[in-house]
Length: 107
Length: 244
Image 1 (cartoon, rainbow over the protein chains, first blue to last red):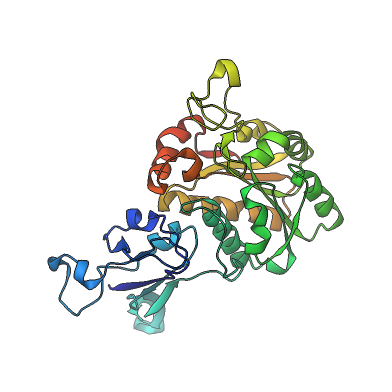
Image 2 (cartoon, rainbow over the protein chains, first blue to last red):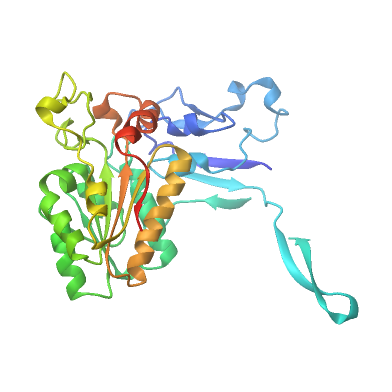
C-alpha cells in the first residue's frame, strides 16, 4: 500500500519529530531553509533515497500512509494520503433456504 | 488517493507562535479534533491560561475568553452555572494551575463543578524564561535552580492530579504523556472521555493532565525531550487513570 504526505514547508519549524517517528525513514530535514529561517522537514527526495528502496520513477518514498508523522506534528501541517485500502465489509446475502448469511465483500 | 489525515476545522489554519517541538500544538489539535468529533463546536466555551498558551484563542475556532492568572476554574464555575447547556473547558499550564491557581483548582474540584480541565505539565515556567515550577522534578536544571532542584531547599514536585483524585467531587482524573505517537493516541482518548462526561451531564469535575515537552527550557532537542518525558518525567508523574 503506497502513501503520500504533503508537508507545508513554509510553516514547518524543523523540530524533526516526524523524522524520528517515521518507521520507513522517508522524511528528512531539508538542506534549504524556508522564509522563516527554519530547515523544514520534507519527504526524502529521489536523489537522497537508498537505491534498494524502490524502482526508479515509482513512488517518491516508502511511505505507507501510516499517519504517525501527522499525529506527532505540533504544527498540524502534514496531510496524509493513502491508496484506497482494501476495505472489507460484512454484508448479508440470501443463502440456502432463503436465510440470510454474512459474507465478506471487498469494496 | 484517499485523504487519511488532514487538519481539523476547529484548529485554525494559521501558524502558531510556539517554539519548534512544543507540545502545545499537539494538545490544541487533540482538543480541536475532539470538539469536531463530538460536534459541540457551537456550544463550547474555552478558557485560555496565562502562560505560553495565552494565545490559544487565536488557534482554536471556538468561543474563548482569557481570565486572570490561575483563575480559570473560578470563571468556569460561573460560566457553567449560568449556562448549564454549554460545554466549558479550561486549558491551563503548570504555572497557571499548579502554582498561582492551586486554590481555585482544588476548590472547583472539591465542589464538583461540571467542567473539563486540560492541564499541561511541562515542569518549567515556559513563557517567563524557564524558571523552576512547582512541578519541576528533582535534579532538573532551570533558570532559578542552576545546580538542579533539591528537596531540602525547593521542596518536592507537586503532583496535582494525585491531590485532586482524592476529592469526592472529581469524577475523572487521568495523566497522559504527549511523547510519541502511542502516547498522543492515548491522550486523545482521555481528552475525548473527559469531554464526553461533560456532554453527557455527568455530575462532577474532570481533569486530564498532559506531560508536555518544552525543548527550549529543558535545553534538549525535541526528540530528546520526548525521550526525557518517557524516561525521567514519568517516574515522578506516573501515567494512567487516577480516578474514574
